[in-house]
Length: 265
Image (cartoon, rainbow, N blue to C red; front, side, top):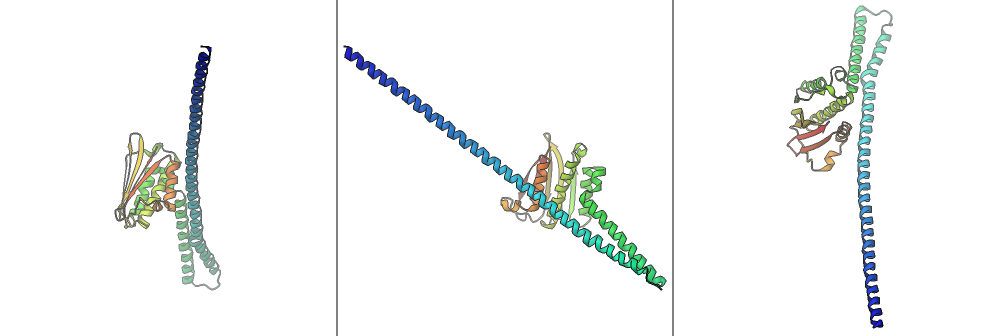
């Protein structure tokens, strides 16, 4: 009888031991599962952040490259349009010291100096306008876009239609400038690369979200091909949209123009 009880106790102890061992094993498996799952989730988040950082680096690089190209263009404009004209003015000024000039020669040299000086002044105003359009500072974004549209319409190559239901007055000066530069870049792309003849720019507010719908009838491109979105111009546009806390989308097909929507606060 005693042996039977001892055997039963031993079997019960073994059963309890194996049950505990099974629970411990399951617990350890769960610990390892959650550990590696968490590690994988953390790694995914790290990879995601690294991609975001890399994307931001590319956008920043695009901005820096654009700024560098702008500096080069301004330097070239200063050299070609102003410095060269002032050099000729200087030469004409020396000619005034030439002895025995008759009245006709004197008038001709003087007119050359006045004409070249006037052109140099006009070019300096244009360069200053490109750096920061005075109309933005004086009258704001609405007037700035209207003037920009008028400048393109005056070329007779394209018809730009601008409509707006947003009150830009409460936007910061930085936001005014970024939106202006975005449209300036889009218009230049439509005319230079897209060969567009009609462009529509529509600003509106829907559900507390400001949006701009930009449409042209140019040659278009395959917007599903990511390589078409990597141009310096588009990267510069994207970086400016990011600066104003916005998002954007592009719809385009070959020979069907371009539709770009960017939303901002």
